[in-house]
Image (cartoon, rainbow, N blue to C red; front, side):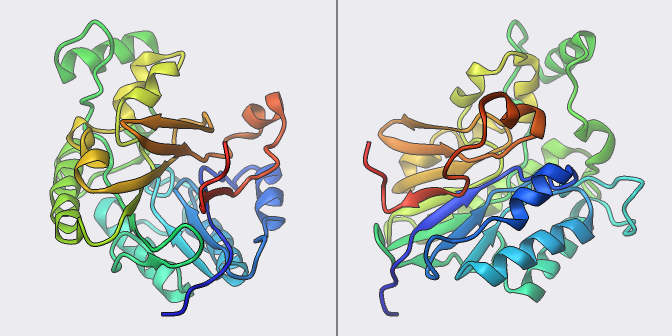
Length: 281
């Protein structure tokens, strides 16, 4: 395949149920016709909204790669589709395939533009409550502390794990299958791992409410960025956009977030952050 120009870019947590965010997405355009865009979850809660946003972006960017966040997996009363859990996720995958957007269920694509070649691995892993709240030693204690503090993720009401007995079991199944796929391709090309939830706990340590960390990932993935020859990790969910480095690997939190959050500091000049080629620091 011929080498392309452009850049590999990423954004997450678009939350287009807010009119201000919908307007931002409507104005989101590539800098080059060869730009690829990673969308790292939480586009919205309704199938119609998700389809609108991803269709628009797929028409503008050379390739769009999507991973689900927790909000896409919610089954809310305003949704016309009654699907829950795995069936809802599968419906989202089929939606993406209809409009030409890549998902965690597709072969991992190779970026051959500036900074490449790298293999991009979109992941869907969920969480298993193993990022325990401070001062607790079991999942049961951790959850109890969160409920007592009133810091409880809305997933507990809207993100159904059917047919799994719980979200932790769904997470375990996803992590096992994903680890198998990554092992198959590791060592071929450098990997860019994309997941809605952070792969390591460290990014959650800046959150004000540490009880919320248990809805932010799993300890199962703590060494994936060092085990699999990773060039960069892209994630969202925390609504704390920043660039950090762990064990020599760049981690990029690329969320837009809710209007009340981005209004506080103003919108970033580069909403779709450049992942490759690496930016000068």
